Image 1 (cartoon, rainbow, N blue to C red):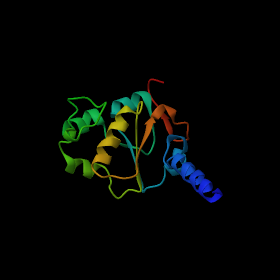
Image 2 (cartoon, helix red, strand yellow):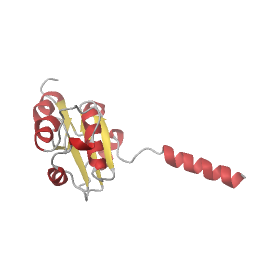
Image 3 (tube, rainbow, N blue to C red):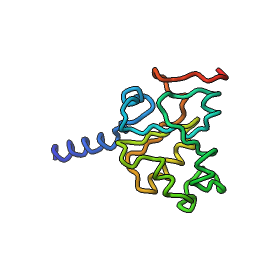
Image 4 (cartoon, one colour):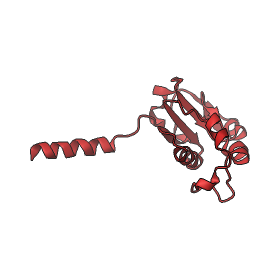
Length: 145
């Protein structure tokens, strides 16, 4: 009985383990070139509000919505029919990456892009949330600050 209880405790703890790729430990892996780091905000928004260095810019509204994803129904919930150019998405997001971490202003756009990529079969894709919660060494201040 004790062995079963111990096994249950271990399984519960393993299930509660946080993902390795989070905003609060970004400095631990930001220089890892096998991790694709993507900011889905537009360049103007990044320059005005600030950003985290070493992130690739793939803007959801200014690029993906025009070329690869139909956002006519909004981005609050992903629908498989939203994808209009899967090939382009596969060229932008590295299927061979150890992980893909995505951030935006609040986490809503990045959550949507994570859902798109998971639908396409990508694994190890993480929503880091909003850039404002980053407290590390690679924060670049925006012009409005």
